[in-house]
Amino acid sequence: MKFSLFQSIAARLVLSLLLCLVPVYVMFLYVVQSNSAAMMKEIDKSQNKRLSFLFHSLEQEFDRVYRSQKALAGDSSLLRLILNAPQWDHYERIDAVNELVEKLSFLLNSSRYLENAYMYLESFDWTLSPVTSFDNISAADWSEMVRLYRSQGSLIWWNEGLYFITVFSDQGTTLPPAVIAFELSAKQILQDLGQFDEEPASGAMLYGNKGNWTISDRIAGEESRLLQQLLKVSESGEAGKGRTELLGEPMLYSVFESEPFNFKLAAFTPESIVSKPQERYRSWFYFMLGSSVVITGLVFYVTNRLLHSPLRKLVLSFRKVERGEMDIQLSYRRSDEFGYLYGQFNRMVGELDRLIRDNYVQTLRSQKAELKQLQSQINPHFLYNVFFTLYQMVDAADYDKLKPYTRSLGDYFRFITRNSQDQVPLDQEVRFAAAYLGIQSIRFGDWIDMIMEELPAGYGGLQVPRLTLQPVMENAFKHGLEKLDRQGLLHVTFNTEQERLVITVADNGAGMEEEQLRQLTSRLQQPLHAGESTGLINVHQRLQLAFGLAAGLVIQSVKDGGTTVHIHIPYAKEGHHAPLADRG
Image (tube, rainbow, N blue to C red; front, side, top):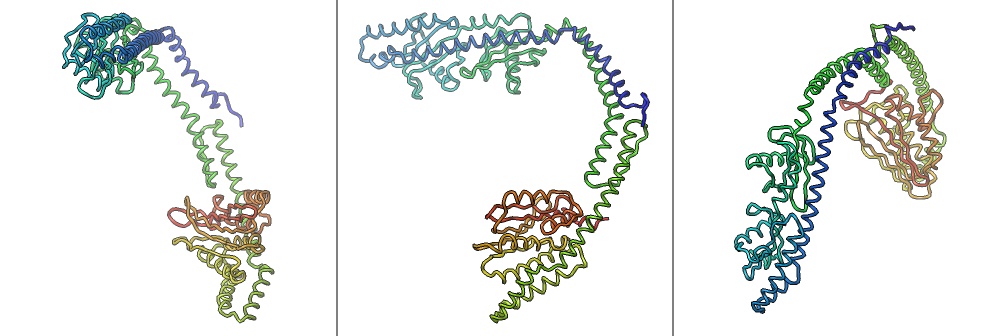
């Protein structure tokens, strides 16, 4: 079938895409010329890089100060003063104090972030300092600082100042024997933070993780608002860097957190630094965004109308064919590729339906003929064993076993010779199998244990192909148990799983070689055909004809380890599954 250029869906789709993309590309090239996004990214990157450098410098310096403080707390001079001071005279104490003050002075001068250094000796109620030698910080103040140290960690906020605290031998008492406090220089920290004050609204802030203290150059009210907003950003999981609203203005922010010292360092820059000079480009951007939405909607409509809807209809029809629904006819008004595909699909489904019906009828007739033949045949070896067993029981006058044996024989032959139905209720099939087991149990006696569990309630009326269970059991005796040189076992169970009944026939007989099992499994997986088949293959094919490909046999076997055959019979939730052969 020929198509004109105008009728071709491919040509119309290309034309539609071109009409949509040309204005998008024109607007996009114009917007690319504006570098607002790039400038924003660079400013954010620069701010984050500078803040990262300051943060790591602060954290490293704080760590060095903290380690020096801990080392001083374990200094031998301090230990001798605490332990030996009661035995020393006044001059010896003064010498020890001067030595400690010199060490405090050395540490104070070693860092530009230290404002002052203090050491409190609880036994003397002395506060040492390299600036004033002796300071007038009271014991109550030291108790408060120790309390904050125990609850918040080594970095505390006390008396409008930031301190590093460490103690000598903290035993949980009100005051340890010695407490060392380093006051950090807020002036120096503010000077470092000042590098971010490039614009009136930009800046930086050092604050505690819980917001209990801050260091910034903001006025009190503004500082409090800014702190609360930064804490809110952290609580919302947006910590790190990004964009948010601070002090009523969109900001680029970066936040670094020190877990060892429980503080955060934040910097922020207003987006207006970039956005104000780019208002003209921003207007074009919004225009492009609105146009993109309209164009996207147009593309969606055109694609859905010309391609997606008819293609989806075709795919859904193929899925119906996969499920075996052949009564499908697709209609299409246009004379394009889909019109041709729909017409060919309708012809294909019609021809496929005819072929399936012909093959199904032929296969069904073949299987029915094989079933009739199977019913009409009585295995001579089985018949010989039956009469030989009868002879033995009569000869031995074993009338107690003779009566149930003949009853089982009657049930067996009555079922095997009744050939008016292709399907029977499952409870009849199970009773026939039980009769067969009754015959075999008397024949083999104690050599083979035979266990058949009860059929679950509600499944007795399930229609199954005649001679489904007994041939599987006969196969177990013939190929697995008859020549077994040890105690044999045949176990039949019934289970339900995933809307199907599974009947399991398991024996501990001779089993199969791996190659033999592979060949048998391969034959079970072959498509249904009208060729001759007997035994397990016949049962498998008749089940699939009745219930579909979900039904059939699954076989497991190990050489000298027995064989297990699972008979799968699907059923519907609302009731028993009707055999396919009986459906209209």
